[in-house]
Structure formats: C-alpha cells, structure tokens
Image (cartoon, rainbow, N blue to C red):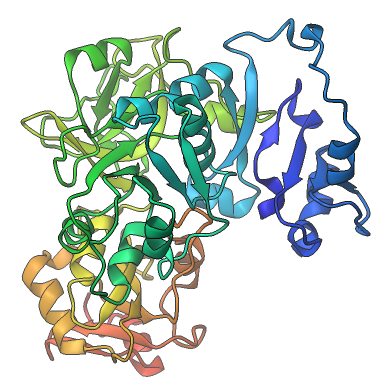
Length: 491
C-alpha cells in the first residue's frame, strides 16, 4: 500500500504522519488502508490540493502556505544521533507473521540513516556519477541507500516511479546513468527481457543491491557488459550487514577481523523442523562449522544496537536471542540462513521459514529454484514446502511461470530436477501460474501458496506430480490426489 510509504517520526508510533506519493485517492483508500492507518493514530496526507476521502489530509496546499524561514533550533534541541529519524514498514519478520497482520514499523535512528548513506561512498560512487533509482521509496534500499546516499554524495539522481524492464536501458541511455540500483528479482527481469542489439551501449559501470542469484549474476554480465556488481546483505532493523567488494559471484560479502571486531556476529546451528536454534546441554547455542549453513545472529552492543519495532514490544522481543554463546548475552536474530566458505566469503542461502525439511533433510528453496529455472520451459520458480497428511515434514512444491509461447515441458523439467537435485529436494508438485505474486520490493510471496497446498479441487491452476515410475511430471488429477493422501502412492 503506497500510502504507508515511510513515516516521519515525532515521539511515538501513535504520532506518525504518512504521505501518499500518488495524486490518486484510490491509492490511499484501497481496501480500507487509510481507515486502518487513521485508527492507529497515523495522520495520512496526499500530495493534492483537495481530497474527498474522510480522514485524508491534503499536503500540497500546506506546502505552498508554509513559511520559507528556517525552523527554530528549539524543535531539534533534544534530537541526537540515537534519536528516531523515521519508521519503515518492513517485511523482515517471518512471512506468516506479516501475512497475519500489518508489517511492523522498524525504528530507524539518525545514526542508522547516516551510516547507510555512506554505502554509496564505500562501494566507489562519486559526485560525478548519475544514479538511477527505480525502487520504492518506502523501502530502505530506495530511500536511505539510494536517495539519502545520493544526497550525501551530492550527485545527480534520476527517479522513476516504477521499475520497468522494457524501459530500463532506454532510461540509462537517455539520462547517461552510471550507477544503477537493484533488489530482489529486478536483474532477473532484465535478463528475461527480449534481447536487443544495443544492450551493451550504455554508461552504467556499477550496480548496487541485493538478492541476485548466481546464474542471473553471470547472465547479466554476459548480456549487458562489464558492470561491477556490489551485492549487499542487511536488514532495515538489523545490526549486521555485509558488502561484496570483490566481485566474487554469488557472495554477499567477506568476513575480516575488523568487521567482526566492530560488528560481532556468528552463524549458529538451526533446527529447520522446530524452527529454533540448536542448543547444547548447557542451554547455549552451537556455532556452525565452516562450510555449514547456519542462522546469522548479530551481537547487540553499544556499537551495534537493535532498536526494534515501534510500539511493538512483542515483535521486538521475538527478534532478540539470549544466551547464545554465554549466559546473559543478547543477539539480534536475522532470520536468515547463511554460509561462510574456507576463504571467508559469505553466501545467503535462505530465509528461516522458507527452508523446509523432508525425509530428514533440509531443503533450501533458493537452490531448488535455481535448478528449476534451467528447464527449457520455466521462466520463474517460487519453491516452498507443503504438508502431506500422514507424513513428517513438508514436501517440495513449486509455483512456476512459463516462458512466452512455451507449454510446460514435463520431461525436461523432470530431467533437470533428477539430474541436479537429490531425491529429497526434488519438487514433487508443480503449479503453473500466469504470474508469481511478489511484494513491492520483488520478494516472492509464499504464505498463501503453502496454505493452498496441492489439492486440485481447490486450485484452478494446472498442477503436476513428479511420477518416478513414468520418469516425468504428469497432470495431478483428483484421483491421483486421493491416492497420494491415502498413501497408495509412496512419496
């Protein structure tokens, strides 16, 4: 909902002001969103001179009437580096928690804004660069790293209201863009766009963002030229982050002594089935070995605090992890599973809650998705685990979209998953969708898909089942579904 873009703080979450960026009343009243915000004590403004929706305040007329005199210093006399600068509504919580209610308002201090502003400087952006922002400004990447970071650099910024794969490179050529920003799936969208002869005719030298898959990273460079990719890892409310300065494809950063000294963190073993850290007989967490996937936790210190969520002590406490390496210590639970290799490169593996367990083995959805998209007919894949009556854990399923003009190639998809995935990780069910549902920052939504399961009686999309006897995917009929539930067919 664009109405809750980002909120300028006063003293508490009950005194927020939220500004709608579009001059359309439907954007702020769609689905009763404006009423929900006003019920929470949040003042909602729209960039217009007039508005007929009750509870919505106009802002343009107030800006025009405002004095151009400097604000009184007394208004900021009590503001310091650790004061709240703004709130950003984040999906950094478990997906099902967000699904059950509104996203929580992460508290962002002036210190955090100041630090994030220097990410551009840290990766080599200069005053002479021209920065292209097409991410939503209600998200920390677009607003703090992009917009605020560009102000810190004193550079030219080009803002586009909405990401467009078809117009992306035309914009870059038109405005002489030298630095671009990406998040989630945007690089994949660019790679999936029709090829053109002038794809490498641009001035883009640097791309800053997070969430690009290894195969897309490689394809992006091959198609669009020698662009330095600076992959980041972090969370709006988190106290630990990484930056990949080295161009190591697939890595989100590299650990060194100074980084770990100033921002202490570790990877701990995590029980995917119980969805909780593994603890020893003393009740302490167990650190993951080098090369082992573990839950990233950042130690809460004076230098690396965790402020939490506005007016939500319960959700703030959920992200705190106590008695990690010694009794009484306190860590921030990122909710992310990462891996550190023998050269200290850090790799993002999956989100807690996305990874599932089947046949006693952990399945990382990101890895399965990477394999599925190598199939001839599959364009996108959203992998998740679903419950099957009478079985422990969750079995693999994937919602996929198909390449333009292609039908689902059952035999080829079967060949890919059998060749490159162990038996426990192979998605036994495939759901064909016209489009995958994503968040405003291009993260794939899974909660509704998990809840809907694989019953063809409840799903209008075409469903397929991996048949090990026929060595292909076959249509999932109601009769076949009954045979699976009754355990006539072994999984």
